[in-house]
Amino acid sequence: MIRDDWRPEIDATLLYVVRGGEILLIHKKRGIGAGKLNGAGGKVDPGESPLEAAVREFEEELRAHPVAPRKLGEVAFDVVDGVSILIHVFRSDALEGEPSETDEAVPVWAPVDEIPYDRMWADDRYWLPHLLENRAFEAFARFEGDRLLECEVRCLDGATQW
Image 1: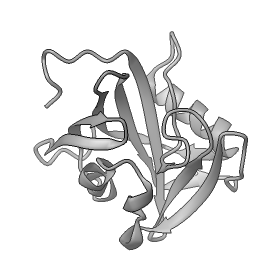
Image 2 (image 1 turned 30 degrees about the vertical axis):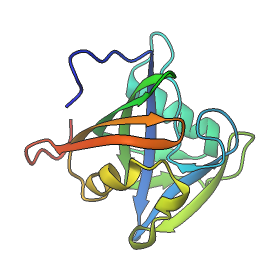
Image 3 (image 1 turned 90 degrees about the horizontal axis):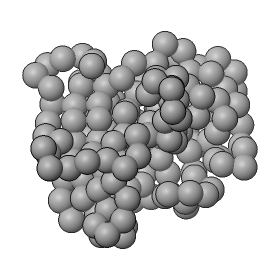
Image 4 (image 1 turned 180 degrees about the vertical axis):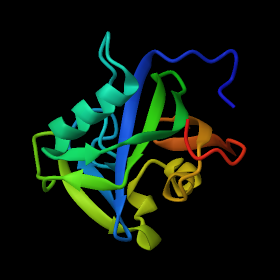
């Protein structure tokens, strides 16, 4: 799925908490995707694993701690004449502490059957259902600005995680 000729400039993470029929999203205040709803996340720092980065970014953005996050997917996010990002996508089913607003994000709980995809990146509607069903996946999404040009998603042969 992730094309042989594609190379990311940035390694990044997204982490979603799913519990009690709801998913924890953030309203992003700044950076790539400002104004959109997304999972908590950000860049992987040098010497840091994607899991370490996912937990660190989540804690920085929401002031809470995800319990036992596991990687369920990768999204190759490519913006024509822009940035290319390999996003490691994680899910947690529990949370320590109450998420709170920071300079980066506002926490938003949404029912899993009413996810506000119209306020998210356009590719999310294609791969996020795999995360909600605990199915490992990989995706390639190409954008021109905010406009989705193409999106391919593949379930990883019934695997439950990476």
